[in-house]
Image 1 (cartoon, one colour):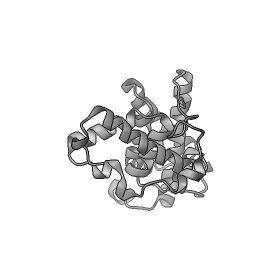
Image 2 (cartoon, helix red, strand yellow):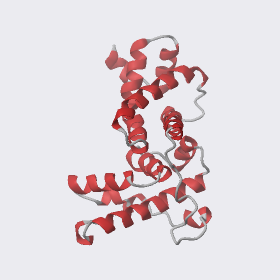
Image 3 (spheres, one colour):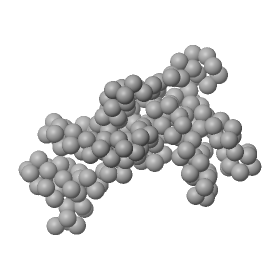
Image 4 (cartoon, one colour):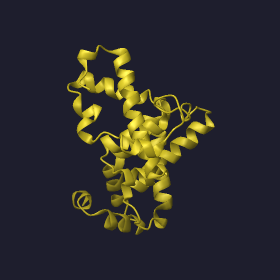
Length: 204
């Protein structure tokens, strides 16, 4: 039964869960576990908290699933729950989240509209251009060193393949802000990598 459930579309999967189908909820977890882990693991550094937070995200999703109206994709809705769950957790631990929010790439005031036309396309993505396991690990390490909003935007865009519109919904930010996060996050990532590794070792 689990195999047939894993192939159904998200609307039917949600309907089955709401009808009390336990196997459908297990299939739901299997389908979206990678997404939730991507968000949680990028936002929270403490391994002791990560698994608990992932479980908490799915508990919250199950609790609020009857209010989901398919105005967005399930993955977008779930990413928003995951991010908000992590933000609440980090705020309780008083972890700084937006330390560099006031600084633009040139040190001036942020200008989201100016950043819209400067966002490189996916062919220029650092992670896609970097080859080899060690280099990919370096990129992941670099992403982890960024502020939360950059980490989340880059993760959802490059690892989960979400559109700017979907990320905007998940992060509850305007699309212009998301594009600015993507541009500035890539720029900061490149700077971080070049500070730590020889330029010739990276394809940027």
